[in-house]
Length: 243
Length: 310
Ligand SMILES: Nc1ncnc2c1ncn2[C@@H]1O[C@H](COP(=O)(O)OP(=O)(O)O)[C@@H](O)[C@H]1O
Ligand SMILES: [Mg+2]
Image (cartoon, rainbow over all chains, first blue to last red; front, side, top):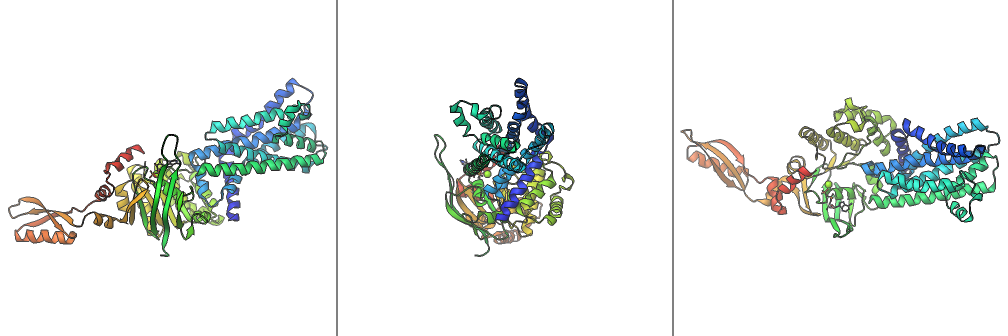
């Protein structure tokens, strides 16, 4: 059974990547979107470009992993293709994990492109590589789980996009991407602490500054908890919806 | 009864009430067994509960109550083992639009764990068998309806299942595609695959199925071979004969008997006595349509009407 599940997960991810993700318009869109935001911000507040890099990376992971993934799940449910997967000898958590994996691989690929560009521009000195890699992986898992949760909760593709943006945009402005969380009003700081993006940005700050503080480890732990909880919720909701 | 491929007891599915409506008893305590190697027909009008039954037996939806055993495994506890060994063709073809015919088949095999070295050859074999070899690299979205259905069946067969579920496979197909498909189903039976076929076409059920369960409003009202169903409706057989006498005058007459042979003998006896000879014999036995009308109290138009709808 475990072998069936693992194999199913892998091939579901590969199939999604081939059928949906790695098509030219998606790739460029995934990269351009976070860039456009950060650029718009940088034009208004020039000079602080370097400080925006962790936020840019976090946004790229967020949008890269969750956008297409949410659309794919809702779309496949609508056309009945998801039932094909449910009919296969792959248990539901593994099926959904395959969907997450597809989103993660795509999001991380896009992020890698952005990372190379950014490090090329600002230099890679003082980067804590292990922390960077761990943070990117954990963030990708968390945001992919978020995308899955959003997509099983709705019926139509446009609803998935609306709901995803309803969650992503506040995160973008409260999660420390443009403005450090510490400089937000206290009330909003509490809200920021409830958002996974905050922890991703924080850990990326630490990784790019070369520090590997205990706080960064805690950030990763919290991200992982977000990932597990969101994934478990998504599996539960999907099981109910499919019945 | 080791060779029952499916055994179902008191299987029930109720859907909770929608706003302002009563709960739906989609399937209400059905019982039947499907034997190894047969084509088992599940015949009933739209909304009878055919798809719901298939969805329960294939692990897509949980029964409200009752039990089922598929290929020796308990549906409630061993659904994954069942899934590994069955093939399912749903009402709507649902392969991946973006993938080619070949890639769709290969993906199915990957999901079911067909060894890598066998996949390509098996896919080509299935494409050839369903006359899709030239469409190997065509995306699923670009295939005709009949081809889509054929490829969906091919994908369901990719892992060589022992039992194949077909939910209204010919609905919505043109006459030629439907005829080809029926031939494919007959071929499958010859190869020893057990087939569970739902349909609302009386003649399709009559032509393809070894045994037929008639389901109406969630209940099975009859289950037998086609012959058995017909026999249950009428004890006696009628034949219609065309007779000619020495002057070339032609007339028709009806004769009754316990069976066809008896009725024909009666006709022959009288013809000989009158110096006539037989030109033609038509067996006037009840059709499956007569059976359906008598057993369900519904008119056969119930079935016909649905053809237009779907
Ligand atoms: N998911 C569902 N929720 C509520 N009612 C349903 C659902 N699926 C089917 N039904 C109802 O159950 C009955 C049987 O449906 P179905 O099994 O699809 O019939 P068939 O396949 O024989 O046409 C119908 O009255 C249908 O409206
Ligand atoms: Mg149906």
